[in-house]
Image 1 (spheres, helix red, strand yellow):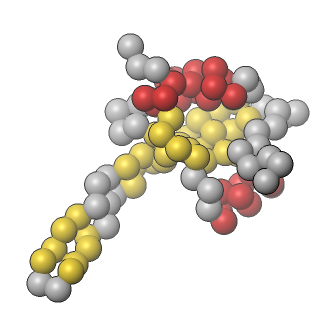
Image 2 (image 1 turned 60 degrees about the vertical axis):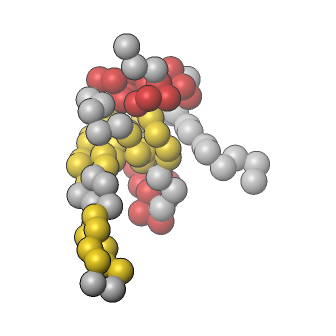
Length: 96
């Protein structure tokens, strides 16, 4: 059985994610590649003590990177956009 820390890897603190949080009460996380929506919902509710309305996931492809004539690839990863119910609030950088 996976723990919440196996499912939720880190919050994504980007400009677009901040706009989603302010306008639509959505929070963006980087999650495990094999995590499904149900596991993500349970992990967020358990870790942050909030109610989740909906989870949207997307698989992001790793970029191809070059260093001179050598070519490599960053790993693929998964992003989850979690919509919180009305009245719920989640702050990562509160008090900073």
